[in-house]
Amino acid sequence: MKPHRLLIATLPTRIEQIKEGYFPSDKAVFLKRDDETGAEFSGNKVRKLEFSVREALDNQCDTLITCGGIQSNHARSTAAVAAKLGLACHLFLRTDQRLHPQGNYLLDEMLGAKIHIITADEYRHHRHDLMKELQKRLAETGKKAYIIPEGASNPIGTFGYFHAFEEILEQEKMYDVHFDTIVCAVGSGGTYAGLVYANSYHKADRKILGVNVCDSAEFFKKVTMDMLEGFEEYLGEKLTLSKEELHILDGHVGRGYALNTPTEMDFIRDFAKSTGVVLDPVYSGKAMIGLWQALKDNSPVLSSSQNILFIHTGGLFGLFPKAEEFEF
Image (cartoon, rainbow, N blue to C red; front, side, top):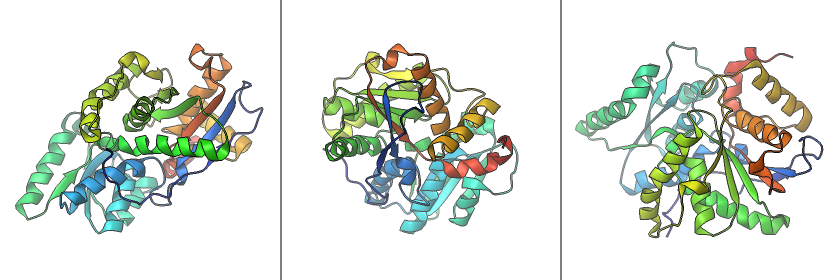
């Protein structure tokens, strides 16, 4: 039995086909427009927050605490949900330099979140401790805070894309199409895990292909399996799932998380010109490059694929702080 969720996002998101001839392949590629889940909430994170914030409200929490990079889509979505619901919000944001508010960071401020700037080293080694310490301090003042991990990628958060997978199954009937392969960026693991769990639960026999934008394929396979037990506790059922069933396309991290090469920025620019779709530089841009390259190389991982659904996970606001990295 799935846990209850809030109804915040603009759902279902539409599906469109990328024009024939763009990809170096005769396979059909479609987009699931999860960049259109709502203006302030745009992107994939709000789907996870529908479940995690519902759990916070069910536990009578009045404050949300979470973390991310200075341009975190998840942090911005959390701030927007908190403002909409009248909850306080604290964000631990990672950067080694104080920046003028812009992009997601600007929206965090506008939405009234309390910002805690921490260094990359503090984030890597101490973010969980810092959030727990704040939760304890708030409790001493009579507040009850709910901690949401990076990207809302924990067992309750995975239900966001478990639900999205079920949405896709319904849309297949509407559009009269069968998506044999579903592709998404993997940055904290919750979106990918939710799709994998739903595919297993429904015995849908789809290939769920992730493209990691940080760390490694092996790292995210472990993350996916590590969250499984917690997911099963919420679901009340066991899934038959092994690490060998997981498909993650490595090799597209580039310079690192949220860092880009000129080639990546050129791809994002040219994709927009050719398709009318704007990708973000952190997640969907790198993931789409991974898919394009795999099709160009006739990768065995896509040999049996015919109708491929790529989930556009949003992140448009993260483009603006990178304006100077584009060449026009």
